Image (cartoon, rainbow, N blue to C red; front, side):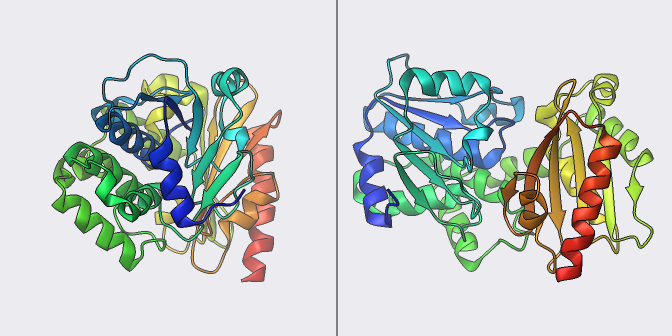
Length: 321
């Protein structure tokens, strides 16, 4: 069932013994949403915990509270647009404790998998939605600086520190309220946007050395292989920032990053300018996301073959603009 705002706000307050699931290869929004909700439930004396197939990257560990062990009664997902984004370990958990009772998401391309869904496809982040739902019943929640910090993390990272076109006046108002609540925005912004390991810089250098640019300069493709990650000493959890690099090149309308997950599987991130739909490009290959930022996956193809398919799709979509 598709819930309205008041129904969804009520459902959050009813959660007992909740297992909150984040998507694989987690970013600041899925983790920020998950840990904000978890912390808020714990503050009410409820039992709750967060689970992610790929674990929590080190730079996001500041959000993790002490979480109790218990047998979940309710399974909730945050920022998950498709059950395909669960990952194997999460699928096992859903089979054991499922079905998913409630999904909260902001992806217009959402493919329903839960009993109930609250979807705001025009929200810049899932954390915006969590904040708005809690504000709809604000007298019932105990929101502290830690919760505000979790939500600020998601709002900031999913808007590229308020630079992406999904940033709205509401986004800025929510960010201001979270700062007023005590979110440590200076530290969060430094960690998320101004800090890189030497390995990350080395990987960026290797990727740029292998950059593919179309003849007209409108499509740029970076490829990150498992061997490159091993040589640089980084893993997939440290690759978020690299997805924005291709679109930073002057004249590029479609920026693509191909990242190897295992021997045969590749994850693709697509970023586009104002006249081309990233969602439409990725939807051709079973993926989805947002108008300017979307993703999909390939299996059994070489990076060169994937690049060829994506470049062809990008040319067709650019022709529609």
